[in-house]
Image 1: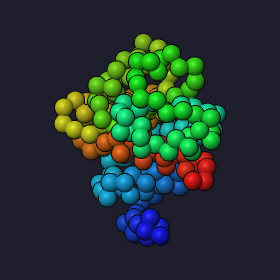
Image 2: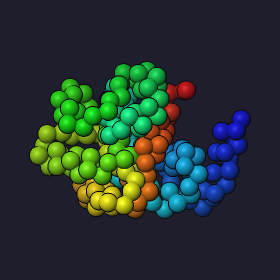
Image 3: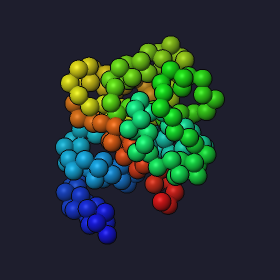
Length: 179
């Protein structure tokens, strides 16, 4: 009941915000997680981010996080229903035999390394969730992802966090399955 009321309040603040339903539900989940309406301006989606991610998840893609905190926030039961698994490692992801979605909420260096691995053609993520929080290399790391060709959901600026990364993952999962 509290969650329902919270989402109603969030929806009131989103009047006049034009987004496709799939992106809107992600934005609402992030705002619900953070109580921060700045995400209306700074959460950006590449053109095919959500559709590509949903298709990958339906086909059993795994989710790779940069922290145990993000890993613990992902609804693993929902992910398992779709045939996916959540992991907390970066370099090892290159050897995974499945498609992957990367959820980076803490380490800008993880985004930088991911960008390098993509450039070296060692990995081809289906989606990059680039929401590290902080002040050192955060904006620069996010700009690398924004300038790339891999589908992304990025929080521009310094805001983000492992909780935001997990919230985005869960918002995607909840579009495919009932909790």
